[in-house]
Length: 124
Image: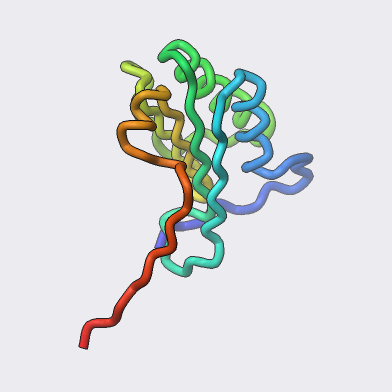
């Protein structure tokens, strides 16, 4: 189980609000927010997924999120990947993981489409 960051006193908006506002500021599309707080061993509390129509826009969204998050909360991501090619950027804040896709990559991986119920069976 991942260590959760300490809450930040006096924060005007939640971390997820900051991320989603940043995506909207840079005209990101098809935003999906997955709340994983009810899943006991989830790697994060929230996944936020979006896409953009160009790699320049993907990179701009990623940069805006990291800059605004630091400005608003003082937090740096634990890790970030994909800024060089900007086809799929991942930004990891431990409690929130952000995926920013170039539209064709997201379509290729079929992420964020209709939710399909999954049935889990116990092994005997």
